Length: 265
Image 1 (tube, helix red, strand yellow):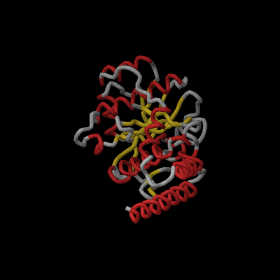
Image 2 (image 1 turned 60 degrees about the vertical axis):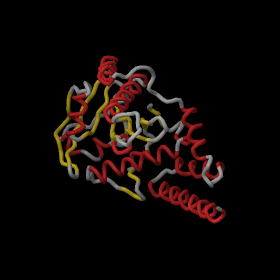
Image 3 (image 1 turned 90 degrees about the horizontal axis):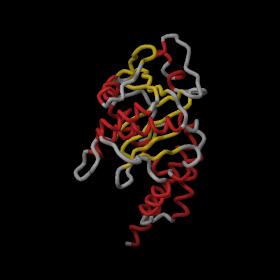
Image 4 (image 1 turned 180 degrees about the vertical axis):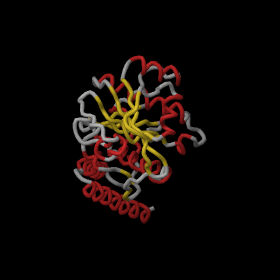
């Protein structure tokens, strides 16, 4: 299932966002060797402060198993402000109907654990379908994706091939990066769904996810009110430093409550 998180509801899903940042650190820094900033085991950058839309893939137990980030190209975005070399001097993309898709990744380790009902391939296709359907319903005409060559091959193999590319391929850490263009049409959505055998609504109900997360943390020693406060502080952080301070406070309080529980056991 795909959970859409944006500026309007992110205050409800602090733990999901935190797990997403941890997944991004494991994939882009640890596995792919990209030149990204990781602090306290979490990867995020200045573009996460611009109220992007996140599409987060969840398994049946509401664990984060995939994610991506979508951002309008009318303001700062990675292709224009980070990957300028890709453009080869071409003017930056600026359009309200063209959005940038970045930080697409899948938690292959979790999905390959015994008992997990979702495959890596199915989860990747479900996330791709979610991107296309979210974009279609939002009036987005095209999506530009900064990907590596391996991801480009996956897109083609899943019948989700880009219709074009911008600029050139450049080196990025251990791998390379390129900018792929995808038109957002019902035909593309149908191709992805048919390839993976996806049927029915793939988007998660916000209230259902929020209730499940609340039930999961009910056994935590930290009181719900205090946990809500910590989640709100993380979600409201306006800068990397503020987010790190909020996360550090959350972890410190959790440790204090866990220590108290262990002493009373």
